[in-house]
Length: 133
Ligand code: MN
Picture 1 (cartoon, protein in one colour):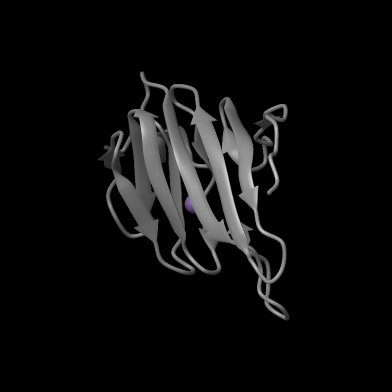
Picture 2: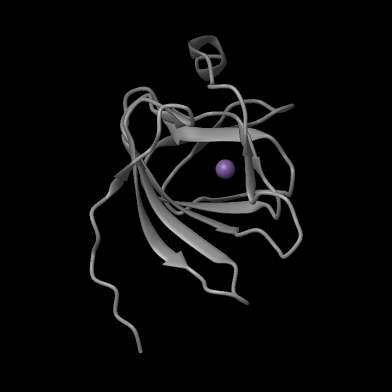
């Protein structure tokens, strides 16, 4: 058995996030496991940049009110208890609603052997895109 005590939270870097975003690594599997689980906390208005995950991603909202959007879809509200799955390679962003904090678990997989990066990151989400709802 291994017990990992709480480590300091990490601030999401400005190239990948708009606003204040902090995350804690909950699980990072060692090979052959590729499990990745982070708890991510977004301040009101904060969000990821556009990005996609090689093996997809599952988000599970634990607190607050969030927004999520896929490249070709509308901005959708997500609430505590909601689970959102984005398939492999689907570009999307996620974050807090303008006047609410939001916390979610993010679950995805690390890169497979001989494969590319686990996630690909693009442009920041503009205010117009964020407010398009
Ligand atoms: Mn994502």
